[in-house]
Image (cartoon, rainbow, N blue to C red):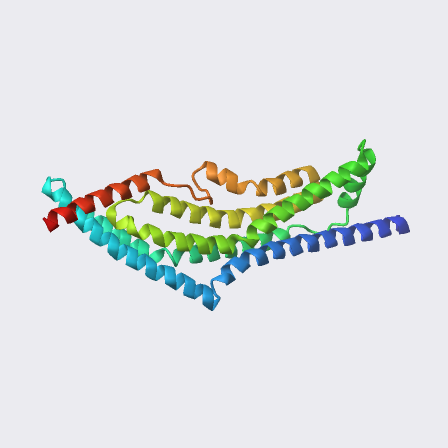
Length: 286
């Protein structure tokens, strides 16, 4: 009646245990990446970090008020030649008011949202690895090692590439909290230019914050996706995991880059404003 041998039962049981252990490994890596990303979000819950953010928030308000004063001087200078536009001046001040209220709050909330989305997505993806006990994992691993011309060398290369992909994403996630804190600090410096109508630098700063949050979400999700694919198609899985480390570079090609670049137009506009302001002060003094 029963045509199943003891060897088949032992093989199926072994394969079921192997698949179950692999599911646990995927879950552990998913929790690891989530914990690393959560560290950046928890950083802003520290009292001393909140004091630093409050300090730069106050600095942003001071620069915003100074920027309004300079914008009024520039408007007075341009009005003498008939080029002053009160509508543009009012609109720039309103933009600056919203910017100075939100630059220290929105990045942190957006980063927390990215971490929560990554946590939920990774948890759902990790449960797609179902223990089947059909022998796919062990048989494919043995086939790779036995049929390849340089089996041991290939295994070493696979382990090295796997470790490189994991370590690269791990280190990237470890420093994101500090990078976000620096971005908030740098964002306060743009509050001087926004009410004067020079928003190029601030727009670039917004793109950098979006790039950081996008990288936080995509890198961890891509790593979990690569681990799931690695079970049945190891080459495709390694490719996806290695691609996770290239997400910041790809985002930078579309204008979402985490590296700050000097804004030449902002420097030129600041210099011109300083010259105009100096001329205005000389005229008033005379």
